[in-house]
Length: 539
Image (tube, rainbow, N blue to C red; front, side):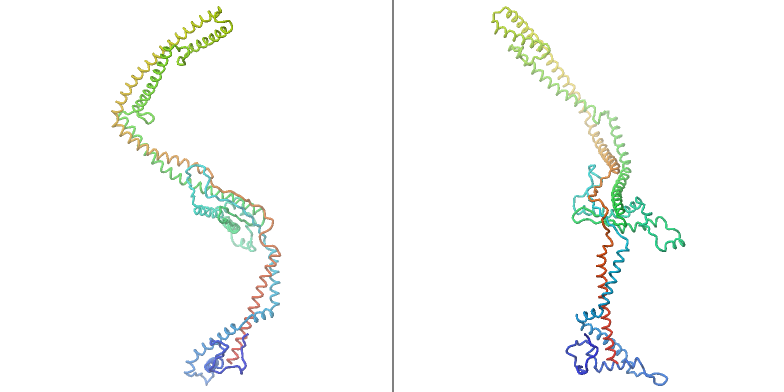
């Protein structure tokens, strides 16, 4: 430790510094002629001698007094700093041993204060709710007005924005209104002097009371997002476990309602802007369509379902020509098959001869053939009944031949009629083409006007459909927020901690305060002794 005085035998000469001290130490200056001269000058300035009625100071003393004063203060500070450099662990241990009782008392007081606070403090019960806030909304309609960004950074920013909405004032105000927290004694606690203030000042307005409740509720609500996920943890504390659960559930409901209202408001604003534009588009479409109809009337171009009548008739005639050609081909092929069957004597078995009468005759002929075959196997080929049956067989064959010739004649008639119809349709088609070719110039201008009108109508219909879609979109909640862990009443309070923990914390804080106080008092005493020793040295 630093000693304010040294034995006279160990004091070095005036012009030689001590080898164990730094050159800047004040102890090196003790005994120095300039230091003693400065101290003597300072004493003369501090207590001037009275010389007669008016004190007189020499000119040399007046010039040396300020410098000597500054030198004395600097030497004093250097001495105290030098004493601090000589401190060691032994000094700190000695200070703690000398003031051990102070440390013990401070520790006991800390324990008592912590236990008293733990027993008297208002308890807090904290509940936690886990939510998944998916930035990609439900895809109810295609090409939604709120497009989702597939990039992860943008999705995380969207979740962070919704996390801010979860603890926003709009959500908390809705919770205050739903749970009527402005009448809850937990949030509206009267102060000790509030009755006196009410006597001298008007009552607090509802807005001020709601603002106070809002501030308290915002301090009790916290939300954070888990790393690398869309999971958000909502924490709410209250003085009652059930009330904390109700607050958490109400905040979640208000949050979902706020997201829906925000999306509906944005969609409504867009729909209102589109409705203003629809009037202009509707007028432009009407003018374009009227221009098309006026041109048709001027050029005698009739249209049905957006197509010119001449073009439609020509297309129908062309289609009929193709169908008539197909019918003629089929009729010629059928007639040729019938002629070949008759020439080969296959009228009874050819499938081309189809009619109700032919079907009946063929059925009777087959039955008769079966009877003849059965009787030939049973009675022989010369049985009298076989003669009658063969007569019937010949009659049926003649009837089948006559029916086949009749069908052949009918097929020939059909072929001739198909040829005549085809020729007539070809003539009509040629006449229609002539009419169509005559209106080509008018059709070119008409198509241009129709394209212009169709383009304007397409834009108008797109805007109209989009407006209707957005208007209906306002009524649908597409936010994708799910509660995966609802709030449950906690089993124990979150604040203050248990009594044993509070006692341990109080003991640690009291011991730390006692140690700091003991060290501070020891350091103060050390500096005071160093100051006293320096004063005696300069005396």
